[in-house]
Image (cartoon, rainbow, N blue to C red; front, side, top):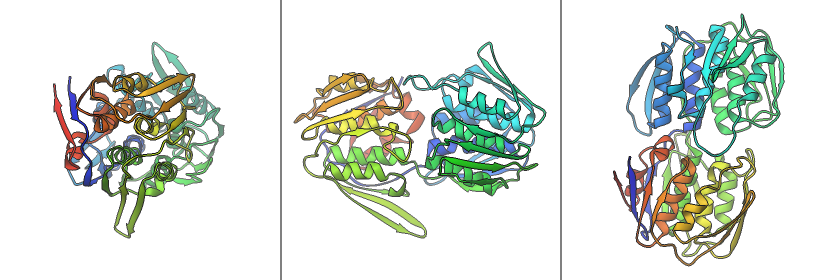
Length: 424
């Protein structure tokens, strides 16, 4: 099992390219199930989760062609031969996003069998909102032997209200509604940029969607969708992670191919911490530049659905606060089990106290390298951020989590001057 060896204390400097967004690529890959014609996607990140999704789609009969490119791969998918609407446990168990095949398979094939998903161990992420929505659209849905089994002759448009804001639930129901009979209205919809990116791809395929980016999305079903080309949006969480890495090392870094527009609240917190951040934008190019102070100031935060502070950046900011001046209060409201990285940060010398869903982080003058273990994707990133600021060598174990969500992380950090080595 791979590990990362990091010798901290080096100021990051230079520039790197940000990859396409994993959380946009996965649902957009599933959009290929809705048409018999080719869907070509550019800037698809080369990540383990993406590879798993492609294997799953191929198992169903989707033809996949991959051409490596700058900032991500070009992937062409053709589901003309779709003949096996089954998502088996062995492919689904490592990735919760596999549930995103449920909606498009039910809409296109009239039937789907999808194993209940796995993924990061960060708490309950139920799929009941997906099931409830499909049932309201006329599907018969049962959970049998660990599989969600949906059947219908054709889905019908319906007014759907999710009991909680769910990104994958919104995406799944939006995918399903594209081929439904009549109009579907999704209320309490997720507003994340990745939802908007999926909607833009579907519209380019002939779908009729309005309201993406608001809490009410309207989808008027059509008889069929056609092929299209679409470029995946930049990964805002990867962007935020490298901004934090630059910040804790007092660095000066330029991130190409990304936009601060997706990260307003994260940028605001980094400004509060004392960083200088500027954006570059032209019709064909975007970048973010950060210059960090010698000593950061602590910043408190509360996670909540977009456009509030993203839960996927909570761990990285906890790492940042461990070496900042002052005391920070971090409240996690999305996942009940997302402070597991705190114990590992304590092994580096961090002063962190957990009280329910609130972490109190008192900044230390320094951290010291140690052996630590990643428990989930974003926890892994927080350990890397902290290790870059620590004195001496840190060994981050179980980095397969990192490979699920960060493309070439060790190579990109190395390009910024970090002393990082992948080993077994």
